[in-house]
Length: 104
Image (cartoon, rainbow, N blue to C red; front, side, top):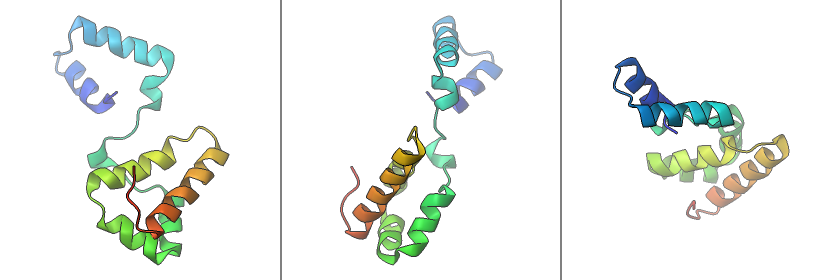
């Protein structure tokens, strides 16, 4: 759910009834709160930044990625539901990047 866009439409009075129903449903079931940041505004989380600083090959590979693929890396880390899953995903992303493999 693109929260930023939905909020802009609501503020402008352009959100229609089906859209308002979708927003209400997303707020009720938690999707609204769990929505991730827009790729254009995404920032590297501190744990990912620290891991990239420690691994030169991973950092260079990450910096060579386009914005979309960088956002995929960020999402893989930030959408983990538990700290254990987040740590495992972070290790996997750093290993993949250090090996120069494509992020999928």
